[in-house]
Length: 373
Image 1: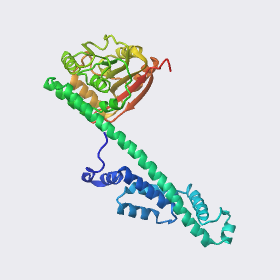
Image 2: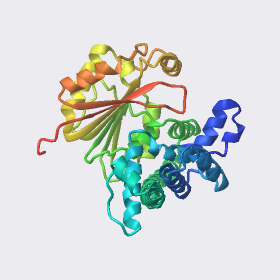
Image 3: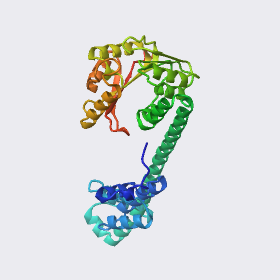
Image 4: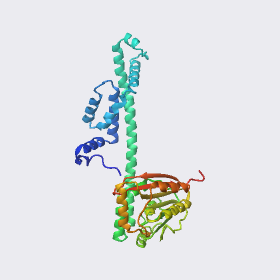
């Protein structure tokens, strides 16, 4: 979720707060488009030496984003400036009823410098209006689309959280509170909401309270949901919350759970609690169980995450002691998981992402080739 532009920025002291405030001021699509158009217009008009000063003054006067306006004036950088001058000169002569002129210095001097200066200014106004207006319009369209997607994302997130509150309303207070806070603080759910989760049965290995399955059911209530976890209490809470769906959830060990064929498999914060050989065997079984075109989403601690990686490992030990599978939490580097999944025939991408909690995780998306495609 993105932060609100500048409501909290004035409270940030020092240079960093000032820079943040300047960069985020007046970024509504209309004002941002006006800032770009104004900056480019002033960058093309031949008021050399004054362009930056005039741009900042007008941006302040009309309450536009000053860094964005100033950046627009950089269109007149040395590699581009000759093209702007030539284009402005030729447009000016055409606008004055003339024809294209020779760019030979001797001929320009012979026909009168004053005439060409007037043509240059008139042409620059025309060119700046065309280029600045086009850039401003493009900026407006892009930011409006981005704002619309952000609004949809926020609305989807609100609907998802209301859905969680409703289906876990009858769960024991501890389980209900845990799920509500987890779905708000863990950015993994934001990623899943934005993910294309495919079709077909869903398997969540180590499903806990069933929040991951609940999100998939929220997106598509007709999918068959499979899940397993070692905690009978969490499984009971998951069964109660997902009672309105085709949910087949059991108390079982991920190492021996029979994985059905699935279009989506979730392995979230599980691998670090089993041994290295068992991790490899589990990932191979997941790859074999995926339908053609199916997706495996894996999250594990980012062992290369520095201090945050150590914090993550410490919290894992705090939460589960020696681990539900009887071993101390010990994940492997993401590149190991990438190699194992690639060897199983899946195409893999890895992503580190900032969480709202002081944790370091990496998410891997592994897709099975679609035979038909």
